[in-house]
Image 1 (cartoon, rainbow, N blue to C red):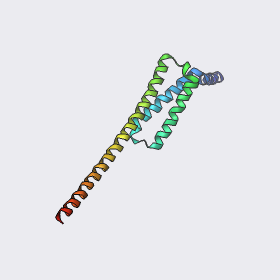
Image 2 (cartoon, helix red, strand yellow):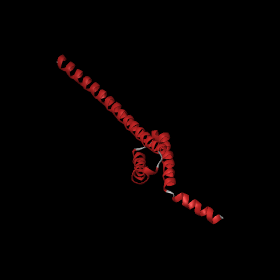
Image 3 (cartoon, helix red, strand yellow):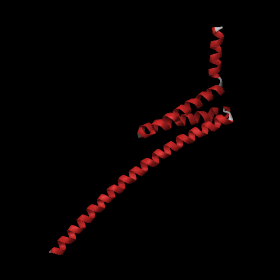
Image 4 (spheres, rainbow, N blue to C red):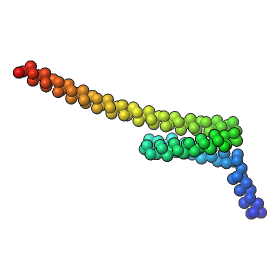
Amino acid sequence: MKRYIFLFVILISCDPAQKAKNHLEYLNSFVTEVESGWKSYTDKDWISADSTINEYKSFFNNIELERLSEEERSEYNSLIGKYTGIKTGYKSRKFINNIKGEMTDLGNKAKGFTEGLIKTIDSSILK
């Protein structure tokens, strides 16, 4: 009996449809992890996350997407969309923060320029 249970477990684990469902669950866990921790991600973390998501895309697009039910395919597309949205939000936030820094620098340069110009003009008028 134990042998049959063992064989059944092996057959289930080799079942392509079950394999696709397992990968979908792993993808869900991965996207949930990214969603909860993206604020602390470094550029290196994003490179790793992009590599992981690309592996999932490759797996589903090349092998298993047709094995998913309509509901599972919808979940897959939703998870890929969610990851893309999180990554885009991160990039937008980083871009906006960079612009803020550049605008602050530009403001400081303009202030320095104005102060230098006023001193030069004042000094030339007094002579």
